[in-house]
Length: 163
Image (cartoon, rainbow, N blue to C red; front, top):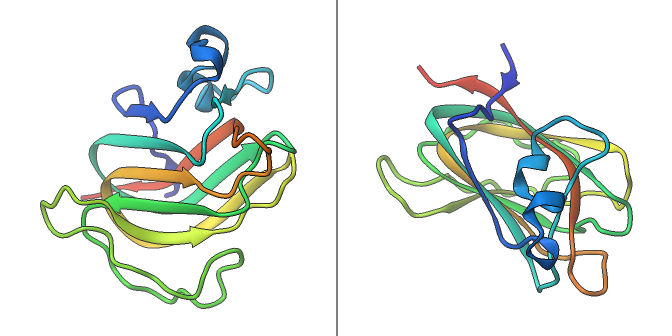
């Protein structure tokens, strides 16, 4: 059964926060499900979010809601852990290639998939090829803002706990 994998024990980190104002724009607002709050990065060439789960998880979907004008045209999902190659063809918004994620017990981040969000305010859902990880890094590379800022209202990682 698909569920949100981010829990209170999940450790999150972000590349930056606008004006270092975590009280108003901090990482906690990525997961609070409040339409009025958001994570707002500072400027830079790329922005990222990392998640360290308290247990291994099977990722199946990623949901992101940007503020239009402050989104990413190209994003990359990386992880550590084991992966399984599955039918990847036909996943909209993804490149045709699939790289395995990490090695058993390895700490090196490996690319899972590239995806290409739209510059819109709508919640966007991306199907992820079945992958088991304990750590994720989501990098927003080609931002639509001239200064490289990203604004995310919702970030959801969906799937199941690994057995």
